[in-house]
Amino acid sequence: MKNILIVCLGNICRSPMGEGLLKQFAIDNSLPLQVSSAGITAMVGHPADPKAIEIMKKRDIDISQHAPTQLTQELLRQMDLVLVMEEWQKKEIGCLFPSSYGKVHRLGKWGNFEIPDPYRKPIEQFEASCQLIEQGLRDWQERLWSKHV
Image (tube, rainbow, N blue to C red; front, side, top):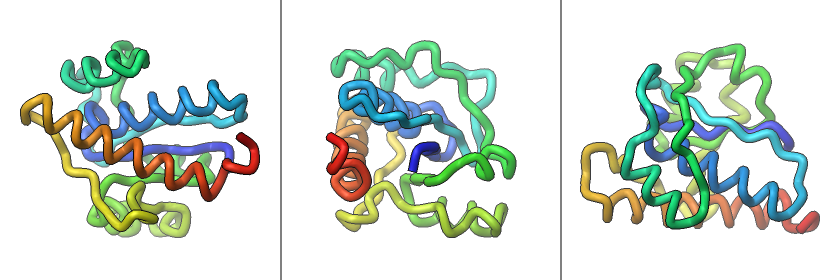
């Protein structure tokens, strides 16, 4: 699985953090992954949330140039794996784009958790969501890329 899309609602908080974290993992481990992110109702024209930028900066990852992308059928068609934050997002994508449903999974699938939306909440909520994203990515990494690391 080389083309991975991380999806949340607006593509300004959770999915940009997930994209940044997974891209850094790929670089650190010389994995040929193509990672991007999108939103079911992307806030196109807005930057990444300043709190998300701050949280990622603490991890030496710069998402300040992130530009939200709207989820489309064409984008989904290019992907091998689509990771969402919450179960309702998986169902929504299945309704909107039925042909893509089989490649859509919850980021917290293996740990059986969802990643709450920190939008318009205190920075502590962004940190908590980021930690869950990191855990979810670690779980996926163990299953998909651990033999390459």
